[in-house]
Amino acid sequence: MSTRAISDHAMLSDCRSAALITSDGSVDWLCLPRFDSPAIFARLLDENAGHWSIHPVRSAEVARRYLDQTLVLETTFHCRDGTAVLVDALALGNRERGHALGAASPGLLLREVTCVEGQVTMETVYAPRPEFGLVRPLMEQVRGGLVAHGGANVLTLSSPVPLRVSGSTAHATVTLKAGQRLCMALQVSSGWAPDPPLRKSRHVHRRIGDTVAGWRSWARSHLGYRGPWQEEVDQSGRVLRALTFAPTGAIVAAVTTSLPESVGGERNWDYRYAWVRDTSFTLQALATATCEVEEAEFFTFLARASVTQLDQGADLQIMYGVGGERDLSERPLPHLTGWRDSAPVRVGNDAWRQRQLDVYGELLDAARQLHRDARPLDELTRCFLTGVADTAARRWEEPDQGIWEVRGSGRHYLHSKLMCWVAMDRAVELASALGAADRVAEWRHTRERIREAIMTHGWNPEVGAFTQAFGSEDLDAAALMLPMVGFLPGDDPRVLATVDAVATRLTDERGLVHRYRAADGLAGDEGTFLLCTFWLAHALALGGRREPATRAFLTAASYANDVGLLAEEVDSLTGEPIGNFPQAFSHIGLINAAEAIRAGGG
Figure 1 (tube, one colour):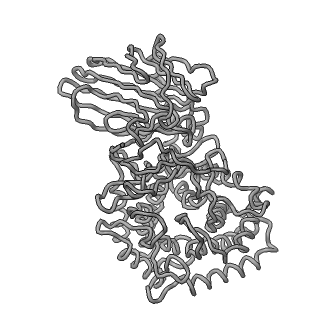
Figure 2 (cartoon, rainbow, N blue to C red):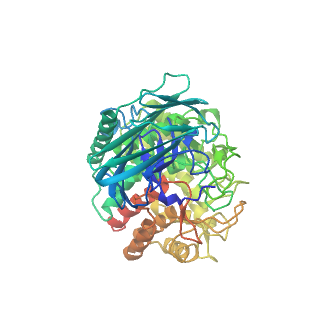
Figure 3 (cartoon, helix red, strand yellow):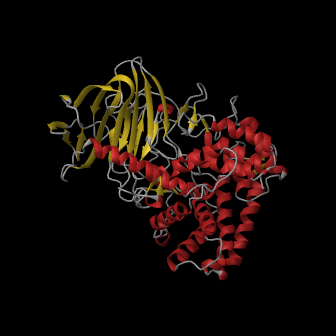
């Protein structure tokens, strides 16, 4: 069983894949060559599922940070006899700069430890376990390192010091004096491909410097936001870039699978995919962080991935693989115990089969954000978006599983109806660009019908708020989106009442917001959602209530770890961050709430 706190991890990314590293220098999660590839190291989910650690033999005080404007990690170990600095990076392609990050990432993990004072004895333990721990590879010592074969992968570990091999694990101990450096690198390729090359220390050192330069070049072109919480917004923008699969522009919800929403429970899902649900809020966040190229790439990815489904009469799929894959069938990995015995561990996500009507509004709102100048769109995009609008108009009265992907029979969720209203509203606005003037009257009529239904059936006068579903008495934080999408003004009395109801009845003593408290058919209680707390801050700002908005924002933002990464949830009992990590939606919520407060709610 893995017990390490989720927040103890820092992320590395090459804009194709990711690693998670603990504060004491252990790579406990690594998927290559894609975010959704089987893990090479998965100790995050089981103590026996592989890791690669570099740390002092003696106890040490530890401090860490990302090098300025990068996702290159620096960990400093202060020992009794000296100080060592460990620098970790997933290599970007050689001399990749700006928006080219990830175009040719080689799948190369770089690690460099330097003694900067006194002397420090360092130990490294290398235990690769490909395919989520199923494979124990055969290791072969070669000049300059190790080559490991097993399963579908070949792994080359470059090391200037000899390693002692015991089964499928290798060890080494080395004493470094001030000014001395140890450079190591791991590269993974397909088992049928030539073995990756072994790399000399100077090459590793140079590639780390080149990766630093690549991240900084990207940061320099994304400095448009100026306002409160500048550092947090900038870091969240980098996180969103790090969660982007560069070849397609897909943005994954998180880099992990099965970190639980309830410790020891069954709410464990694979988040290494791209959700249509996140589209419009993601594009708003990218716009705030001046990531215009990333905006366009993400929208293009989703449009291309889903473009033929409506032609076939199918529901628009709610999520896709990072390459545009549609079949994300879910299966358990029973050999893994799960983080703190939270089983089952799952790969794949059967939510791809669900009906969620909100996706139509998400796509059309995203299109509106990208095409504000009303210039004609290309024929493929026009046909696709017109089909999205027509489908929303035809299906808005049907039940679905809702934004939270409730597993069971469908309901008439308020948020789903709201986003169908958004679909109609944005389609009317885009009609000129879509070449769809002949549909405007119908879309307007449907928009008004949806508005009437929401005002009649979504508002519950006995509860004094908009509720989770038509006819329901249950509150849902998704109702906070009513003013965010422009359905009602932020200072509308019904919006203010709903915001107050969420703030008092869905918020715990820490000031963090639950998604809902209604039964959802799954065992166990989930934690509070950082995204929903940022939504509360956003909605308060839109209502002109800047001080409580700021308090809510600061409460949510305080749960970032020491390197500025946010999880999905916070455990209601312990106050510990839980859920898949780092969570794109939490960082998106931070950016959008900061902008709403900066703008004074206007």
